[in-house]
Image 1 (cartoon, helix red, strand yellow):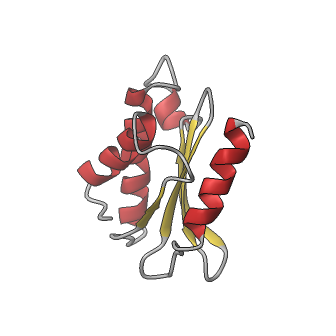
Image 2 (tube, helix red, strand yellow):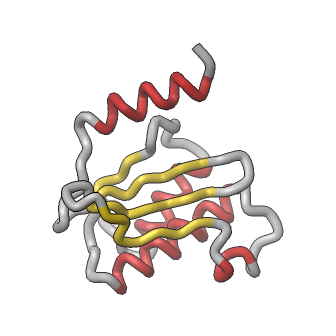
Amino acid sequence: MDKRSARKRRHLRIRNNITGTPTKPRMVVHRSLKNMYVQIIDDLRGHTLVSASTLDQEIKDKLDNASNVKAAKEVGELVAVRALENDIKEVVFDRAGYKYHGRVKAVAQGARDKGLKF
């Protein structure tokens, strides 16, 4: 089994216990080699409520490297600001099978610093 399929199995195992509701949606993180992506999802309706990534122009202009911890923290802060604008104050954090370390942890910390609770 390779790393990618092991992560997918972990993510499916996590998703059996985590669901997003309209009052407390799910904040899922995806990490690629070059970018970070975050979505806040209402699983009951199947809609993405808020999203942010290192490809957004607001973040892309500030950073020279989109694949480091500093960029991940910026994405977390941006998604938190957008969530609070849409009256989302509390979320369930879904790390998508990644270790809670490095860039994934920085996204969570950035969102917490801007006032998002989970």
